[in-house]
Length: 450
Ligand code: SF4
Ligand code: SF4
Image (cartoon, rainbow, N blue to C red; front, side):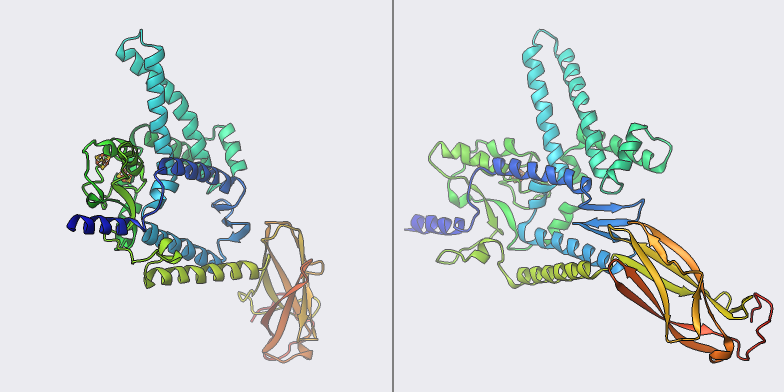
């Protein structure tokens, strides 16, 4: 009766556990897709913090670093995405998506394959010579591989075309060239010596994950009550991190990659039994009497998770609204108050203004300026407006001139309108025009200041 209860309890506890014992295959498929995404994102300007041009490419939007609101929303969105992912799905990122893990495992696999090939084909050589040959062959693949990985990685910060030119000219004089060479060296050393040791010795994500996890976070769990362990140690040998999951599900080294689940399934499957290691939603996962509803099966197991997903949704909505509302052409008009006013050769009072205009769109654009609310005034030196190529930023100066006799002495309010073509949008700037408190004769010398 007690045994029956125990097996019923074990059955009940495994009901919510993710199905399947082919995690290795699933992981390789997901990792291949991630590798493609990792390579394609910067090459097609989908995502890049473009340091030389101070831009931020984010899924088709070309944001300027000074577009603070959008950059802030993007950063918050990404940060909450990471926090929500870590809280609900544990170290899914480490085991399935992280480039460091993908390349470390690829380097491990390649090294083993080369060793096997050399041992098979050069069995007539001594162990030292075979080892040297293996190292030479591995290095011959590692070096170009590391250059390629570094190229993709640096493309997240520098446009790939610029980078390619620097690579062709073996640029070692500029800061970008030296940075590229240093990152290549670090990458070679990483994949030659560190690999998965990086995850436990350097990467802060593992520590962060431990802070964000709670009693419902997805983890890989050894369940002694799901049968008797035959102590074959296959799970330990299969673990890329070299740990024993039977000791604890909360070891810092465990990336929840599920290789141990496959290993145990394989060995116990031959005896007609299921794996003793499973994915579980927390250590003490308990199932309700019936099947779990869909939201529990995807990890939404308490209000905290729903709250963080709502927050993610709010930031995603805010970000998409901000991106859709952003203007492709940014115009700023500022008065130059170093000189309050000057008296021109034309006898009119002049106030100087500065314009900063940026075309953040993909088509050439023209900005023209007009004056409103001050009929006696006119714009001088900006008749043609300014033309901006895509990505171009210009600074210009112009004067507004008015006959002091026709306006108020002191401060006059007016509006400068910047008309942007072809979007036909107007930017309006409320400004002031300053004249002497007492009107001077129209023949006064040029440049007189007060
Ligand atoms: S213990 Fe299992 S899940 Fe954890 S890293 Fe090792 S193989 Fe992966
Ligand atoms: S593979 Fe399974 S049966 Fe073998 S030692 Fe690991 S947990 Fe026990």
